[in-house]
Length: 306
Image (cartoon, rainbow, N blue to C red; front, side):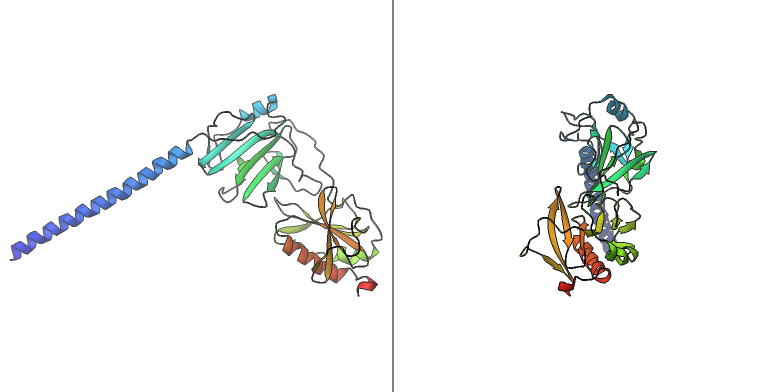
């Protein structure tokens, strides 16, 4: 009997070992297969669309492209599918994870006197975030031709421009665009003193107050990658406002939205002087709420509005 049990146990163990070996083999096969598929996908040529790049075929761009590294932000240099756009290249980890670069593009319209560029390898870069996604593009603002590097900030562990030396391109003294709201006419600003003196260091998450003397009676908060929040006190009434116009009430302040020189401008009404604000789309609810509370505290209401 004991001999029979012993033999049965041996058979059971062999069966179990065989099943385990088969299971491990299947797992390894799946892992190896996935790795092969991943590697093949990462090695597929990247297709880049043609985009406006007026200086992409310049000699400066051609020379700059020759200096680019094999890796950027941990991504390997990719082959591009034909037709290859001039002045363009990419690095990728998979078909859905890549960093792209274009040389010879236009200066971004977001570059203005309030911009806070960052420096990498002696070149200055302006980060511009896409408000609808996690994509960000870094533009050189002191080089010609202009270089743009785009990456998904959710996929890269560090800024891709840390691996790109744009200082080899000719230096250029490109004038930034005027400050938002700077074209508005100024009226009496005496009632603005309290607002200017008690401005918060942060108007919304990530938006920090900066010293920006470009425009009088103006407060400016900036955040990397975002358009600035600008509040100007003591401006002329909105040109397109008329009684009965649609207003948006935010706490104690009614706001009128207008368009000035093609840009949205928000006017805070009902105070002893009118105020104008410019702000990014992303996070605008928090921004306009905090601006309303600041205005209500520091700028007296107009007599008829009290």
